[in-house]
Image 1 (cartoon, helix red, strand yellow):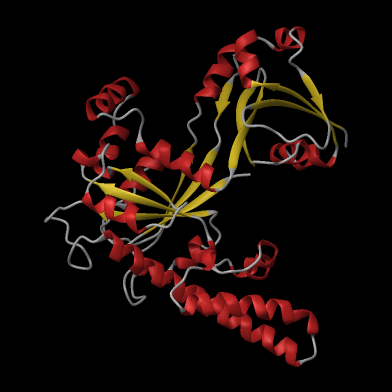
Image 2 (cartoon, rainbow, N blue to C red; image 1 turned 45 degrees about the vertical axis):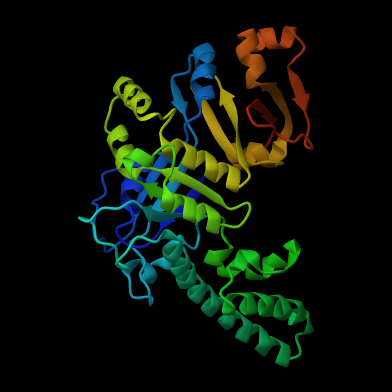
Length: 356
């Protein structure tokens, strides 16, 4: 499976700057009339360590598709407001909040207040979601009037979502049972998606945050994800080669680019992790959900492997690195053969046996 995320926010908050850093592209910064789309490689140092033993022809990291939506605005008049459908299929949303002062970059609301901006964007998403829920509720009500009693549960659940949105709540906070969320899956509510808040701060606040990011942290509910990233600084880091980049980050007090933390946070938010395959041709990372079994992992590689799954040959990355070869892992008794019920662990190296 491939992860995809949508970047949203008001105009002039640094969305495209962060998008360029993540995707290593050169999208034009400023007014945009369409979304930017790019791919980001998921940095995982284990890939190189595995390849140091396998000596594969190529290394293939996991990837994330990123969609950078044009700026939203109050009242639904922004270009981004009209393009919200483009992020409806995303797994998660990244909301970039302006947490820096710069008199040369005017704010669309006239002042810097990221908590206000967060509430403003939430409202615009809620308006769209309310429209979708209301329309589906009307369709469901017609089915009930026609004697379709099976739609009663759907009607009740949709009513809860409607009332939540009408009271300026997000769909993810609606009081519905987990199994009842299926009734809104088809309309892909934006406020039901996991949200990661990125506080785009000035360079001096890259490691500590500032009063603006502190205000955002205080306003968020428990469990909501927030990262502090200095977008301008990250853009400078992205332009450097590997050696200069490390020195630059050390001078700035950073241990790694903030965009790497952002991708890891997205993985954590969506309950994802990676397993690996390795051989002469390639060493590759694959993305699955935590708790997925070996046949599902096989399907991430190719549907034929899942359909004809027989067994998975498994060794951990730690054991492979410690013993230095598959043969040595076998000699140490650390090599396993697992069946259909095996739950794949983060960092497992798999070889799938199948027959179709």
